[in-house]
Image (cartoon, rainbow over all chains, first blue to last red):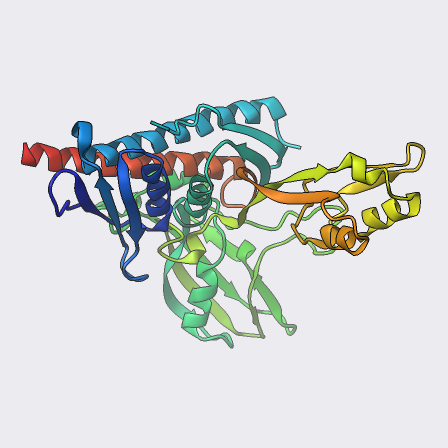
Length: 97
Length: 301
């Protein structure tokens, strides 16, 4: 990862990742009101890399890295919740048919 | 700030078998549902034959043809968590990455013989080719996967090495035969408008739906929703209603935060395990990015 601009905006390059992570992060970042622009692209289908562009309004100490961190934690917590409710649902079904 | 923490997300399992699972996932965005699907296909590690040493091959198929076929045979992958991918392991111990299998057959009969995955000998108890179990209703016979047929005196001696990998390396490592999700439908029936229709019209509407989501109750002279699971968003029923001039009688549209997943395993791992691992792998990916972010920050401040 290499943020290329000052605090309020950055481009993150995620090496070894693809649309799986790029699109999920893009969605969560766009849901953050201090993010003014967020988009991602996979520059070439054979290179395993995505670029995630994040621009924030920069007010109230909003930074692109902060937004990215929030996004990551958000998706992790969604996953946690899905994990929990999946196991609960599995137990509710009570074994295989 | 509108934060999606998944607090309102919900999972319920509709059907659970060894090799398939159907579950519904509610309260998350498509991007997350799709991430989960993609991880199941391309990032859940399994075992597959990756290297074949051909000692003897007098069959009709050439060496690389056989090697390719062997690669595609599903191997039970419970052991996969104890192994390393070859390009991630720097040590000297081959047993940390490799599982050996052997195929040694010779046709001694006048009749041609089938060589199947059941003829393979594994040096590890827990790594075995998956054989089709068959069910009562299946027309296909249970048995191994056909690799090649041998004529009299033809022989095969192949030494195979199975390794850990993921679907993004090669599709042979993908643990799933099917991993799909679809939007659940939101069905709205305008009851007022429905009352203006005759019984035969109502029946015609029910019959116009190829996914058979509705049923007509003759006693109450009404139509009711039976199940939404079969919905394909084909638009046929809406077309029928519009033809009758009853615009807006029935409205079916996809719900954007409610999905039905259907996952079928190739047999290498249990379906429930694949989903569970996919969630875990997705989190690990995010954690890795988070860790990198920490490193950048510590360098700059």
